[in-house]
Image 1 (cartoon, helix red, strand yellow):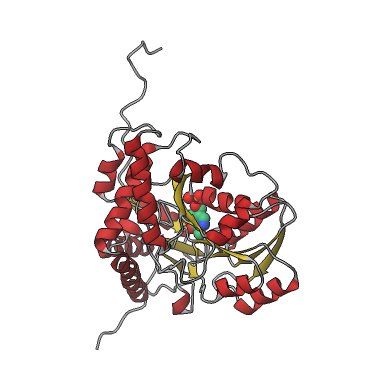
Image 2 (cartoon, protein in one colour):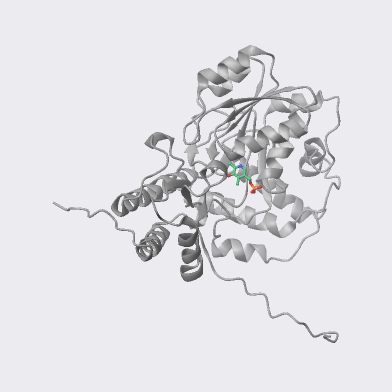
Length: 387
Ligand SMILES: *Cc1c(COP(=O)(O)O)cnc(C)c1O
């Protein structure tokens, strides 16, 4: 038995990884430094000022003037659950556009909350059809229309134009999942008439996992104010609003260091400019797609305009063991990519190029690693002729 002061364990030294899955992504060294700054208490005026900075930086990132804009101490799923739990009461109708795993998760959360859930389905790899959404809204009074902007399971970016106006014409709220798209794809919340939107800190925003930025407009806030059924304590957005912006009444102990990391990550986006940050995601994906062409690999999403810039899905070639390739990448090269979720399990790889991980150097790293691992399984890339 070890004596006091002794330990059976070695120092913690997690391996260094190039994180190219659908999140988490690597963080800028400046973000790592911010994480190790001294802990402040959650009632310290200095910490409250940091929260105010984060709210302001998030408004710029969401392109909104919404006063209720904050980052929840929870992951992206917590943001999803918080928005649905605050906007829905038992018996309310929720229409969800479902063309992937994360939209299905939103539908299931709605069911657990006692909502009447209507799924507007579409094949994985395509976007949800606006006319089908319209038909679902016309069928019965609806409280919330929920859509996933960047469906990480399929690599599809859902066009959102006109959906806000469509929801409002039917007196529904538009709720958008931007966990994998905020900061990587243009998402002007106010211009798109989105009423509520949530994200996650660890994908395109370039911070560690653990925080869920979210924003609600006045229409959504009015729904919170008119609620009859109470919301779970931890996710009660009105209590959280009081802590962040009101009299700063204690609600829960804020994970101070995670907030430092998010503040630095958002500040860096501002320094680069949101526009350039988003443009970089498109440019780097283009380089990856060109590399796929050279390797003879087929993107899963066939319509180029529907490809989510932050997460690219690619078909595993016939006869290749996709799991073995991922294992080789991780163990030999320290490169993490992901396999398929749900019905795409074993059929695709998912490669995320998000936030600090989104750089051309990482495209070269993952393509080289893939070429080698595929070669070991006897894969022959079609010969590319140059003129
Ligand atoms: C990652 C992701 C989530 C879940 O976020 P967690 O941080 O894993 O809880 C939800 N929706 C989408 C679209 C995602 O990509």
